[in-house]
Image (tube, rainbow, N blue to C red):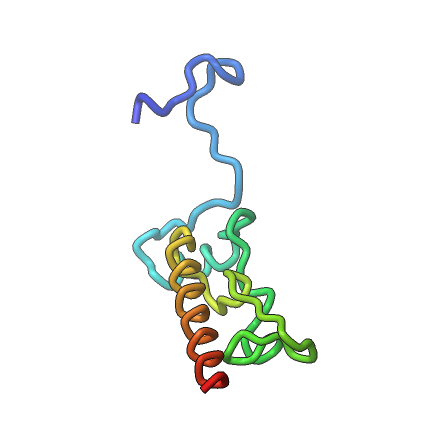
Length: 108
């Protein structure tokens, strides 16, 4: 950990943790879960603002607007737990293939 210490910054101090204190018993899953729910957030990978069933239907069609779908991370009800890029790409492919199948069925 020596390589991560700040030697010349902020008056030559060592590690400086800014934020709420970690639970004393970090092996306690319940306490660590509470800590994470209270403190972990994301500003880079927004999701959950366009919930399926409230804003869009299960086919990702926006309620009350014809010919508009929302197919992105905002439709996730829970975080994939990592960078959501792969999950968003798979969702886009899945919905895109559904749209193509729907159109082909209507044309037949």
